[in-house]
Image (cartoon, rainbow, N blue to C red; front, side):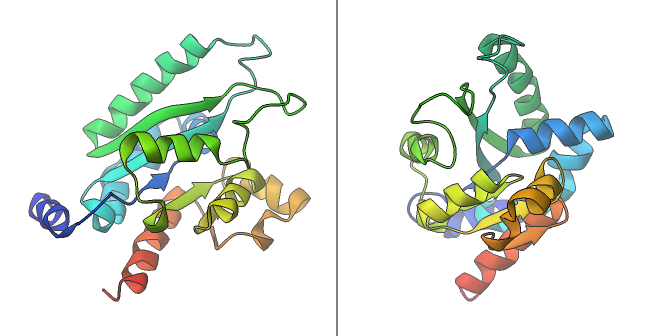
Length: 198
């Protein structure tokens, strides 16, 4: 697997492609399963994302309105994310960010999905090639942001996904509806392979 990773990196030219990873999906699945690495960031997921750039590179773009509701602080979330990020790192993945909108839906801001500010910020800061990237998310706003960026958006049924399909018809604007994030990862590799004629 390490040799495959090195080969993929050697063949890559230009800014890296990326997967925008949904923090809400991660939190929900981790809470339900009690083991976030097995569900989201283990060897299976690394293998699924391997062909994208030899390693998973994913900016985490997330709305955490509980920060503005004073349920927890940005520092609390950052501390949780650091631990989550380290678990992914151990599994051979690299999560970037987080890129956080702390506002409530009623608040006027430029960072809330489906606006693209946080995605563009992540792309700029990490020299990410958006044209080669994919958004994976569990809400209508995730796939709407992908649509606004002009890139594929994959909706996962886990987390808030099923609710967003039933109540917002999020599946109608998604490029793909996946069972879970592993299924989405496998689709991402297939999509890229087909796009580049691999």
